Length: 113
Length: 115
Image (cartoon, rainbow over all chains, first blue to last red; front, side, top):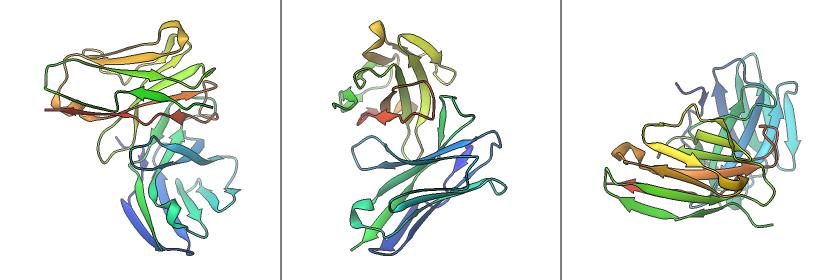
């Protein structure tokens, strides 16, 4: 049972444009969400997170939006750079302070120079 | 600061053989995780340690998988006997605290192929 879903396996964007990666979840108990970025042959690295008490969190070029009623979150990258090309995983935690992260299946972003 | 170290990076074995993976977390990190990532899927937690105690092993197939973390530092994950469906990347991660609020740092993973 996939509780965190990333329905787009891949996305291609021109350099300088906006990249929007989407994530849906089914478990209403999730209250903390994270995005991880993964390059080939490396482990995932933390990118940005958001708590369910917020609907937006911004860090430089990266912004995560959370729509609790729709059980949907998105990651916006503006402007996109070729170095952003990687696989992006969305992850969720059942409650703040809990340890178990549930990951989505990932979206491969390709930023075209 | 040195990252999470894992070895070997790649391993190919035949089904029914046994295999072991090693992980050295970031110095001072009390929490250690083992994840299994099957091709095309996201990482799935197998087991979590807090120091040398097990916090969560609910998704560990205990009939064939075992893990230990002696002295609360390094950890090993063993599969015995391996099945074809165990082919995956095994990721080790560590964190300074037992909470999703604290960033998990991942190692490069061990890619296991079972033939």
